[in-house]
Image 1: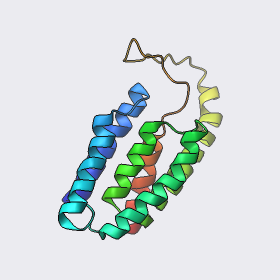
Image 2 (image 1 turned 45 degrees about the vertical axis):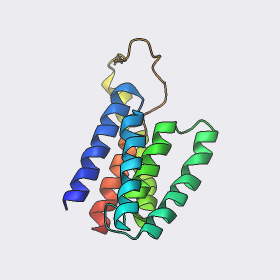
Image 3 (image 1 turned 90 degrees about the horizontal axis):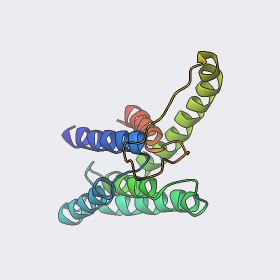
Length: 157
């Protein structure tokens, strides 16, 4: 249970940073992946208890699902590294459920935003916290991945 809480807190940190800055730090993503990989090498299983082979298959699935989106510039590098780190810490059903859940969450957001935001009739100004970095016009995907991961954990655990 503590391991799941650590993964959830890490995911929240990544999601908040992506939401506010439209960028996920390498310290969070690559650092999380490195720690998950070292833990898997040391103990022979992933952070959430799956076998090391299961973690390897989850990593392969995460790469197959995210690299085409990165090549087409639909996903950022932070999202790819986030799912790689998650794959090294979990298993195949969790990765697949997270990606499917993220798609469901983004679809729900698209539906709600298209119906509700025009009726609010407010002008929302977004200010980047990093003054020298131009803000991306794309929606941050890490919060949707967090929603997918939360749905997956609620259904699988």
